[in-house]
Amino acid sequence: MPDATSLIGVPEFFERVMDAVHPLAPMSHSLQEASGLACAEDVAAPVALPSFDNAAMDGYAVVAADVVTASEDHPVHLPVVGEIGAGQARIMALSPGTAAKIMTGAPVPAGCDTVVPYEWTDRGVAQVRIERAPAVGQHIRSRGEDVTAGEVVVSAGTVLGPRQIGLLAAVGRSHVLARPRPRVVVVSTGSELRDPGDEVGHDSIYDGNSYMLAAAARAAGAVSYRVGIVPDDPGAFLEAVHDQLVRADLVITSGGVSAGDYDVVKAALGSASSGANVWFGGVAMQPGKPQGVGTIGDDQTPIVTLPGNPVSAYVSFEVFVLPAIRKLMGLAPYARPLRRAALTHPVTSIAGRRQFLRGEYSVPTGVGGNVARGASVTPVGGHGSHLLGDLAASNALIVIPESVTRVEAGQPVHVLALDEQF
Image 1 (cartoon, rainbow, N blue to C red):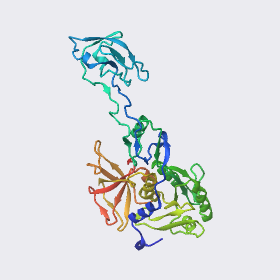
Image 2 (image 1 turned 90 degrees about the horizontal axis):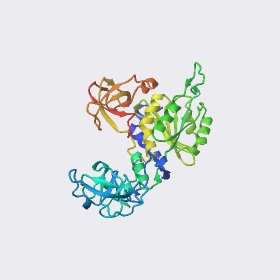
Image 3 (image 1 turned 180 degrees about the vertical axis):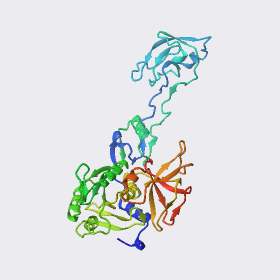
Image 4 (image 1 turned 60 degrees about the vertical axis):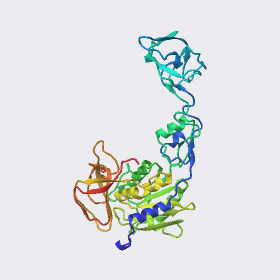
């Protein structure tokens, strides 16, 4: 492993990872598949919204001039000539001096210029008593008052959430061009690993990394594939990875990237016959120093090789892989935004390393924003990169800069809020 003088900074490795990935080509998606994806086109409404003048309330379609004098003391009586239901319109025009029952959403007949709500009437069937005069145009939704035909309703780059999906459906679009969810293959290496549910011996452990990383990739919006455990054998590792490239837009590995005798990932990907071009080195961070990034296979599929210690693997995913997945999806911003919070207890850090400490981030109810007033963060657990229990109990990473070796209680720090949607 490179010594401290040859470590590269977190920003430099971040750029290496981001340079290895490119946004996926847009595809047509049904609206049911498109939620959470980045729209890849400017969508113009093919129809106006509403597409016709319609009633905003249940009531009576009338001519405003016929009821202008209506009041409780001097009501106006009009004959009811029929009923207009939503999707069941049979009355196409209304003669002056008459009224028609009309339901919310039903088209307003020609000649009608206002709707009297039921509450202002006696709800008569053959004849209606109107006790209040509406203004001209009241309770009518005019054609195109929401969206005009040809208007851009969703711009390229917009993340398609429920509101955008609803709007696209309302203007008649059944499909939309969007960048797809990347297919992320997760590989764990180590002859000591066992699947949960299997028996473990005195020299073996359960494989938590691949499940954690696959879940993290899914949470980021990707389709994740967890590959079975790969032993410490370079040939077996390369075979497993190459078998997966047909369904991979990104490969993530954990373990085997340090300086040990059994660091299979470095040995395998560093061979001339691997079909890979991967940089391995040390990053000035804790946890997560040993890292690798490059491409593999004929299609130059990006591959990111993470450390094997679980906390190191997770921190590395959050700092480097999550932004890579978001870039593949065309989602901006790529990286999780930094928040600021007051530290509740003092912490120390190693000079020259960017420290990512586990923490419990808290924001007072009703307070938000990029710099949350009253936000605090409490360190959780120790520095050990194997302390997965402490990681599970955390909801944030406290970021200590390379130049800082101690932060006192009460001082502000930057925080990555791990459960925050962005």
